[in-house]
Image (cartoon, rainbow, N blue to C red; front, top):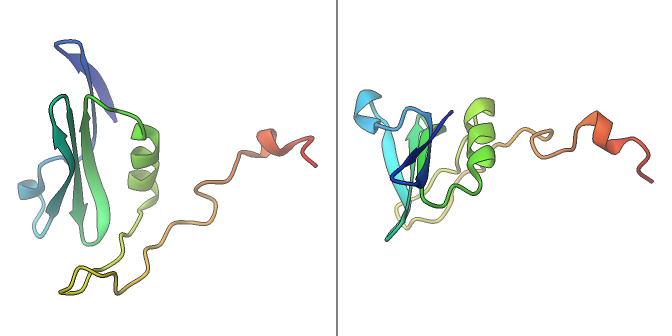
Length: 103
């Protein structure tokens, strides 16, 4: 993950952000409005990269999904999910230290 500022606007890049560099990769633009741009790159159903410009909230989540090999749900011709995405069960659990003393 790389983090920087471009003309005082925060930018985060994770993994491969140019789908043309990966055979069969696709790009999904989640936000494209003034001051905010978010693009995810998928390769073989996995998150291969992301770029966040402006609103960098959730950068840690995208980085974690990239690192653990999140597989996005498949979509049919209607756009409805036909498969089930896989996220490791421990992805969103607290660390052992955070659980100490919890009741």
